[in-house]
Amino acid sequence: MEKKWVLLIAILIFSTFVFVYWKLTRAYGKKVYGTKMWRHWPTRLSYWQGAVLYSIGVTAITMFLLKWSNVLIFLEV
Image (cartoon, rainbow, N blue to C red; front, side, top):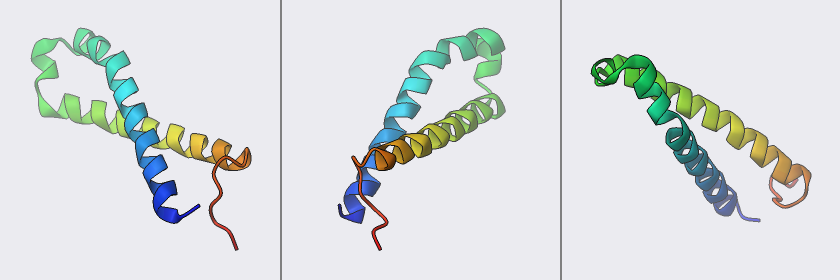
């Protein structure tokens, strides 16, 4: 499998997990911080940092599982 396809699959998986994380937790974040505090950029920055870090981790685990199950073939020597 070409590297560009593996990269495209990884980007799609990452985008999907960011979207799912946002969809599941945005109402909870607003409720915990309150709408006034939610509008401040440091609160939202920490929220999005968490979203990106969790999505990177889940994407790495998903890519490893896809490679382990021989669905994706990359890093051939």
